[in-house]
Amino acid sequence: MIDVTVLGTAALMPIPERALSSALLRCSGRSILFDCGEGTQTAARRAGVSLMKTDVIAITHYHGDHIFGIPGLLQTMSVMGRTDRLYITGPGNIARELAPILRLAGPLAYEISLFTLPDSGMRLSELIPGWREGARLTPFKTDHRVASRGYSFTLSRAGKFLPERALELHVPQNQWKLLQGGEAVTVGDRTVEPAEVLGPPRKGLKVSFTGDTAYCAGLVEGARDADLLISDATYGDDAQAQAAADYGHMTFSLAARAAREANVRELWLTHFSQMMEDPEVYLPAARGIFPNTLCAHDGMGVTLRFEE
Image (cartoon, rainbow, N blue to C red; front, side, top):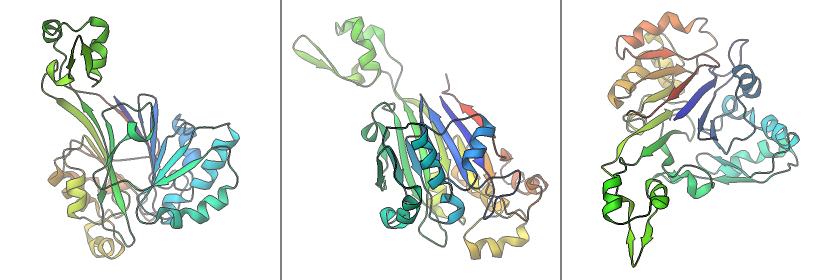
């Protein structure tokens, strides 16, 4: 099960009903914050979610509307008594790019680790004990005016446990959970691997988040088969396609095209220009290309569950 809450849907500058870019993903008591624009803390309180136990902040790029909420959040975590290490990832030379931001946060009661995800991604349990073994965070290339990336969070699902096979192999029942969790067990003088007592892998879950980007192959491949794609859609009108290209963004139609080509299940549009008073006005343009499209709003959330 994955809970996703969009916290900020504005681009460039916040307006009363829209904080700047951010979204929170929670899974089995752990959480990842994607971007942290101005107003993220207030938006989280309005949405009824807590940022205090965030494990990872995943930054798409270093423009102010995606990172200016970080110093305040770091300070609040410290004041609230956080002691667990916080991990922050982003593209390029993250230490250089975030140095001014971290100086603004001042002394903290916990450690911060800056790291760059490999292109192949990383099992989060390798970084932070307590994450589910099947949880993985993978970056993908996006196309903006500066170094940028999107992220896909995947939660794999092992095959169905076959108790008859475990019994045939004389595995004690008190060790079945270990096999179900992906661990090998020792029975007598032999090792029983999980694959010996599990059926074929079942469909997992996938959530993709773009940050700022023009339409590009990296986005399509990175979001491939996602259950939910949260995507840049700064411009509503197709007449603004040239402005979108010039500034490294997408129109509603281009975001819908990316979702269709990536074969995602559902598309949420976000990062709306402050000039767009009502994003819903432009929604038909996207739905004509990809029908399962919604305009996100601050506080919008969903719970994704495994298929039976």
